[in-house]
Amino acid sequence: MKIAIASDHGGFALKTALIAPLTEIGLVKDFGPSSSESCDYPDYAGKVALEVASGGADFGVLICRSGVGMAMAANRYQGVRAAICSTTDGATLSRQHNGANVLCLGADVVSTEYAVEIAKAFFATPVDMSERHVRRREKVERAGRLSDASGLAAADPEVFEAIRAQTEQEDTEINLIASENTSSRACREAAGSVLMNKYAEGYPGKRWYSGCLPVDAAEELARKRACELFGAEHANVQPHCGSAANMAVYFACIKPGDTIMSMSLDQGGHLSHGSPVNFSGKIYNIVPYTVDRETERLDYDAIERQAMEVKPQILLAGASAYPRAIDFRRFREICDRCGAIMVVDMAHIAGLVAGGVHESPVPYADFVTTTTHKTLGGPRGGMVLCKEKWAKALDSAVFPGMQGGPLENIIAAKAVVFREWMSDEKKGYAQQVVKNCAVMCKTVQDRGYRIVSGGTDNHLFLVDVKGSRGFTGKEAAAALDAAGIVVNKNTIPYDTESPFRTSGIRVGTASVTTRGMKEQEMIRIGTWIADVLDNIVDVSVQERVKREAKELVAGFPVP
Ligand SMILES: *Cc1c(COP(=O)(O)O)cnc(C)c1O
Image (cartoon, rainbow, N blue to C red):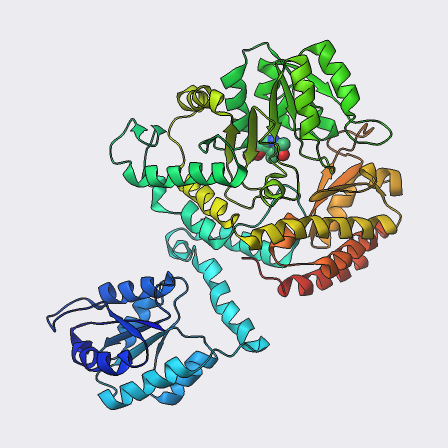
């Protein structure tokens, strides 16, 4: 057992007296002070709190005259639960019920002998893991979710209100938007950090400004981890979003007017793959490919025939609303035959690739672009991976080609998330996302709804609500929204409705899986979706589902 101890001048004598008896219990690390000269208690509370928060110590002991100032200061640190204990009973309860990990003692309150007894009781008592205590401790941490922004409650109440409302919405709704996820607290801490203060035009080691050592370290971590996680030769982690990542690739390897062959937007492609209203459609000659009318899947032979005729400079694979696995090996063959540069936009499936549940495009593609906030679950941002031979062209396309200073706080958050993905837990998460999606999809399908392509291989599925029940995706999404289930309207292949009305809805399981939901919950949610859509004009069904959904999500707190 590792114990970190510190005091201020008022607690110095008791600290000195406690070190010998505590050394019999565990390994004691003294964080000072080394004399009884006047000092500031928050400085010492902070040292011990950080040691405990980082896992360097199992327990902390902090001593001042009352214990109060030490507890206040230590409790400002995430993961620290500091308790002032003046009796052995109090020490026991603070462990059992509150899971306290820092013991605060008042030198004016307890004798040395009794302080030793209190400490012994504190260290010896296990944390009570029964459901109600776990729940209450979680609520302590959850309040912390809003406390992320609690300074704003006074500094800017209007912005605070928007954050409070978003927090409440995440807490109470079932989010099935396939392009969204829920970030970890660690990711949000990096994203909201002081790294946002730094201008760092250029790349690590080659910046235009002084003082870039800290951000260089963060960006280097992000680049290295991205390459390791995806097995890539080179990574550029600076693009501000997925669209910017795509722009950087086009700028790096083709000229205005060149031809890009990409998946048609109304069949599942993305704006930045060549929509006429997007820069991509304005600058480049876009030739769309489509899915097969019968199977609603990519027909690789048809794509090959088309590519041999069109001879595009870029053949782009990847989509925003395609429920099936994509065969990247086959795309490589086609590119080799028609002489195109192979670009894969894995924005939606990056987490599935990182988790090994979708084949990786990285070995095949010249460039792989992605967002970091979809199945990957990180900060809103973009990234490009490429073969070494494209590294220089890519880096200069991003800077100075199209961006100024990078968002180093967001880059640090990307690094945090890449590290999270190296754990087995995340691999399990990716598998669960896909399992959950298959189960929810089947539940809806079994209620008589036509699923585009007949099912799903990944984290999303598309329901043809028009073909199944005669109303539009817009109407379906609105009814589900009223029932606390958030999806988006989406065109389906060969849709006869406008993109504003659509025939379909898109449903994804990345976010609910992040909350810890499994197959059982997917069956309940799929059943609710069918209940609401079967009775689309019946407000009472929406109200019932909303009530039941709220109850369900209460058991699955957002991280
Ligand atoms: C979401 C998405 C993007 C771009 O995302 P932004 O960060 O919103 O620019 C690019 N490509 C595909 C396939 C996407 O699904």
